[in-house]
Amino acid sequence: MVTVRSFLLTLNVIFLTQPYNFSESATAECTLTGNSLENLSSILTTCKEISIANLQVPANETLALHAQNDSIITFEGNITFGYNERTGFLMTIRGNNITVVGAPGHLLDGGGARWWDGLGGNGGKRKPYFVQLRLKNSLLIGLNVKNTPKHCFRIYYSEDVILTDITYNNLDGDTQGGHNTDAFGISNSKNITITNCIVFNQDDCIAIMSGSGHVITNNFCYGGHGISIGSVGGRDNNVVKNIFIKNNTVVNSENGIRIKTNYNTTGIVTNVTFDDITIENITDYGFLIRGDYLNSGPTGNPTRGFELSHLNFRNIHGTVQSGGTNVYVLLSNGVASNWTAEDIKIVGGLKKDVQCLGIPSDCGLSCKDHNGGPSQYLSLFLLSTLIFLIVLR
Ligand SMILES: *[C@@H]1O[C@H](CO)[C@@H](O)[C@H](O)[C@H]1NC(C)=O
Ligand SMILES: *[C@@H]1O[C@H](CO)[C@@H](O)[C@H](O)[C@H]1NC(C)=O
Ligand SMILES: *[C@@H]1O[C@H](CO)[C@@H](O)[C@H](O)[C@H]1NC(C)=O
Ligand SMILES: *[C@@H]1O[C@H](CO)[C@@H](O)[C@H](O)[C@H]1NC(C)=O
Ligand SMILES: *[C@@H]1O[C@H](CO)[C@@H](O)[C@H](O)[C@H]1NC(C)=O
Ligand SMILES: *[C@@H]1O[C@H](CO)[C@@H](O)[C@H](O)[C@H]1NC(C)=O
Ligand SMILES: *[C@@H]1O[C@H](CO)[C@@H](O)[C@H](O)[C@H]1NC(C)=O
Ligand SMILES: *[C@@H]1O[C@H](CO)[C@@H](O)[C@H](O)[C@H]1NC(C)=O
Ligand SMILES: *[C@@H]1O[C@H](CO)[C@@H](O)[C@H](O)[C@H]1NC(C)=O
Ligand SMILES: *[C@@H]1O[C@H](CO)[C@@H](O)[C@H](O)[C@H]1NC(C)=O
Ligand SMILES: *[C@@H]1O[C@H](CO)[C@@H](O)[C@H](O)[C@H]1NC(C)=O
Ligand SMILES: *[C@@H]1O[C@H](CO)[C@@H](O)[C@H](O)[C@H]1NC(C)=O
Image 1 (cartoon, rainbow, N blue to C red):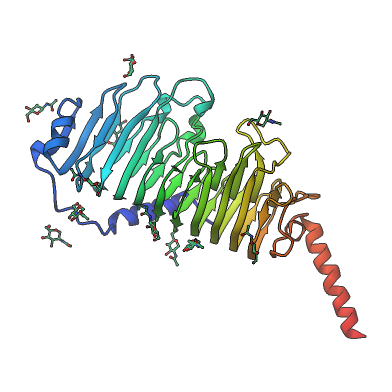
Image 2: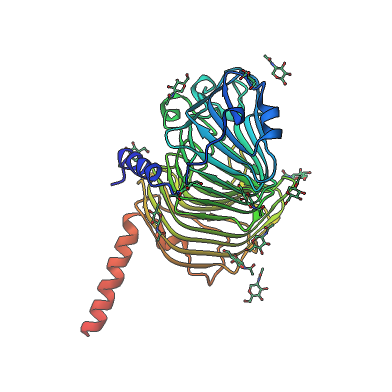
């Protein structure tokens, strides 16, 4: 059984075995430390090896790391942020060919509990996002983020970026009112890779709203809403294509994997592969695709404005709690085409009479093979008894 403890241990192993060579260290003039951003702009214009070390970012300010091409930014020690109710971002990172490294033992501590009120982005205190990335040809490695006010990584207008060996530990939010603490949100971007990351949060582990060429591999997600395409629709870019999602684990979460398109909007989701996904102890839906999404609650009426084509599902397995649903698809007829599904083995959800709508007829995915709890085993038993009797005759 997967436990928080064993994954916190894995987390330490990842930090100790990180391949990055930390010996290059910024000089004192290129180090931002203390409790002021006063020297930030001169450091960014004169240095390409920058260290952000034991920094307390003042309340209401944004640590804007808009670096020269080919810069290396290293976080060292404890980076904290002053509190006030505000919107925007606590930090932004922009540039071309930027390497962002977390030195062993560093912590980016968002101090999220000061903002948490159980309402996230839907009301209550005004809360900043944690970090916005606008990067090209860049690498983020070994970052250790804790307790963000709401969403953590917002990736916009970025191309060819790898995020690897990142831990996002928002476990405190489970008991202290963390909400909308999505780990990675990707929009308007191309070729974003998220790999070997560990997430403990209260909303989507990964949410792909738009873009192409994204690769999501070897990640562990705990406590949130699972790995999502979407919600798609109603934004400036509503196309998601050529997405590869493989070898990810989703534990103790609301959903395993899902694709959600917004009610009464238009767009395309095409050529998406989910392969080798392990889910465990999912409360709501193991596998969910719905075309009726609304943030305030799905309408139950999927709309026709989308194409969901060339979706491939392979080896998706694991458990849903008895009160949940193993597999659910709710799409308008004709919206979906050219899907393939093999080795979908999601068990445990006992919700009966689940009616799926809009699954392409010949794709190998059928709602009733997966749902209905004990009756699914009963029908298997009856079928095998029948075959046995026929063989006996
Ligand atoms: C790390 O970098 C330093 C200087 O750039 C180099 O001397 C050293 O060999 C490197 N270590 C490893 C393990 O690559
Ligand atoms: C800014 O840099 C100058 C020169 O290196 C240094 O004397 C000063 O203490 C720095 N200010 C802060 C707030 O770190
Ligand atoms: C916070 O910053 C914003 C924008 O920079 C400004 O409008 C606002 O007055 C600031 N609030 C406080 C409390 O300083
Ligand atoms: C920075 O990199 C971009 C993309 O490679 C390039 O277009 C731009 O000219 C570079 N800027 C400088 C100042 O070298
Ligand atoms: C990217 O930046 C690194 C330094 O971080 C530099 O060694 C490398 O040459 C740069 N790559 C390109 C394509 O400019
Ligand atoms: C980082 O600083 C914050 C605020 O001072 C503190 O609460 C936290 O314990 C520190 N974390 C570490 C790892 O030193
Ligand atoms: C994204 O990756 C694809 C396939 O590797 C490549 O053809 C394309 O040029 C890349 N796009 C960008 C914007 O880097
Ligand atoms: C799958 O991901 C896990 C981390 O979640 C990693 O330990 C394992 O090596 C990966 N397997 C493959 C075949 O890449
Ligand atoms: C479909 O997406 C995969 C990545 O999963 C990519 O390698 C492939 O080229 C895409 N196919 C087409 C026809 O674009
Ligand atoms: C499964 O999730 C529930 C919350 O939905 C939690 O109370 C329970 O401890 C989890 N089981 C395991 C084995 O982690
Ligand atoms: C659908 O959206 C259009 C505008 O895009 C709006 O006029 C219409 O009322 C909406 N229909 C429903 C049922 O929400
Ligand atoms: C689905 O595949 C069939 C043949 O394999 C093709 O004729 C059809 O255009 C495809 N549909 C889409 C939406 O790509």
